[in-house]
Length: 384
Image (tube, one colour):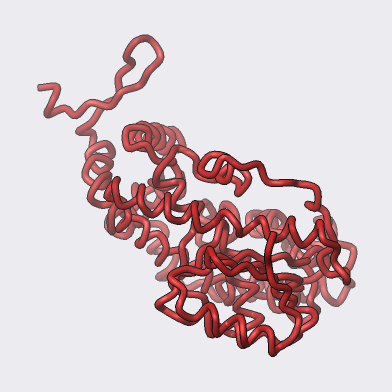
């Protein structure tokens, strides 16, 4: 398998020069992150369909030259699952890759699967079976052997063909504009990931918290991120998401209560006191108008959201797309409280789901059992 091993700045400059007129550059990375906040970038695999290369960031040390490819708006950067790759490349080059193509989103707009592995994509679209022999490799170890390099390179070799097939399918199904909307949304999410002040957005079940609980969760998440960054430790070693939500839902009224909440052993009495002070600060900064706005929001029973979720599943099945591409339960709860402020009131979702969903919540659509176990939704207007 012909490829170049790029381990000097001179070789990197030559590679960048040769890739600058490419239509696409497919990218994958290998990194380590188990014991640190910041990932250690170990390899970058690239191909434009003709030139195959493996870049060694450990040997080169400074790979900012590769940023010329990432910032080139004439080149589509193709990733399988880009969130972590983009974050890591940004930290290494200070360039946010754009435009980019994301296989996971394309697949979710073309099939019922929201997530699909690269292995399955290659099997389904290229008829090839990727090796899994080096899955547990330590990519920071040098020198890498031939088998490791071939394994790493295979992660990008089939991406040009998958890109062409998915792009053609999206355009044929007239969903390419949907795809571009999702890419813009993903870009914003990745940019938010790089801002520790916005890390609370990624807390699981954050939207289910009350306004008081959200204030605590925001403050603790901000504190955790800043501490994890300063010590370069995994955020979960400081305080995991589950524990943040637990504390937010039942905030301790004393330091003694906090000590009973089974926090990571790394926390000394001083750091426990610091956590307790941040909880108090969050509670003290909640403004009355925030509480008034929260009280005005309509409380949505779980069974109502479950019924709406079934409606979404049926609609997704009719469209032949993944259910989560349309909406999740949190989206439906927000829609029920304030439809106009929901993401379902913008872009392609508004065109295909907003009115029907609003009619459901307004009682203008009802569910009926068909053939014993199939739920169908019928408009009252059509029924009459």
